[in-house]
View: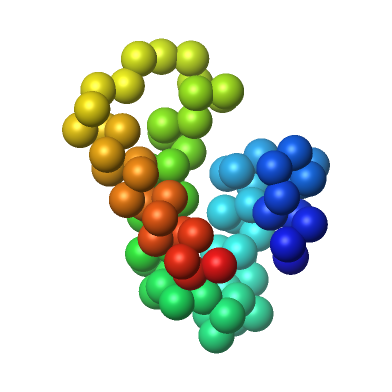
Length: 77
């Protein structure tokens, strides 16, 4: 799992990674410290803020929201 999550280590897009985990939630639910709904929420927030995929300006409130979600995901993994 660590190699898949390493920067530049995954051949998957973030949304594909989310779909795999959500689609196989039974295999991941005991490994993550989030509910399925929390995981989906945080992944959606982070994916919306990805500069590499979505070239746009982000206001400070949205950036702070993404930072919280990134932290939640990091702790969960």
